[in-house]
Amino acid sequence: MSARKHPLEARPSLFRRTDQGAPELASTEDIQTSKHPEIVESKQHDSKNRTKRTYHLPDEVVLLLSELQLQEYRQTGRKPELSDLVADAIKQLAGERLSSTV
Image (cartoon, rainbow, N blue to C red; front, top):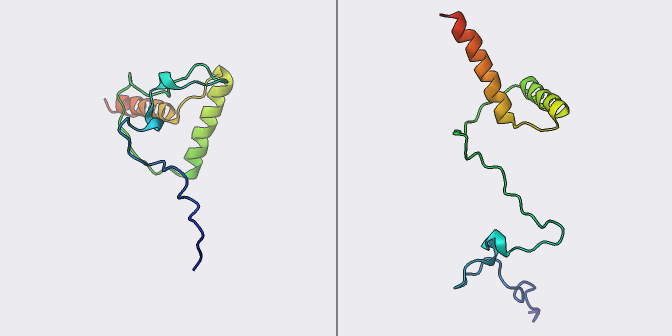
């Protein structure tokens, strides 16, 4: 039998419970960065009412979405979200098809 120590025993656990809470969940005001003084929150769609759905699209449709995204990025300098492109396409299709049935 080897008397060798387990290499992880000396390390503090990342998942330990403490009475002060988890240090990795500290508020953003406690974080100090040298390169990035401003912390930018991720874009959450607070103002948009959205529902997450999953659809299976053919490869050529996925490629078309990528091309539309790239085209808008080149024109505006802003990369649109794929969800926005899909929503616009569905609205346009619904406008064409629903107005032709009336």
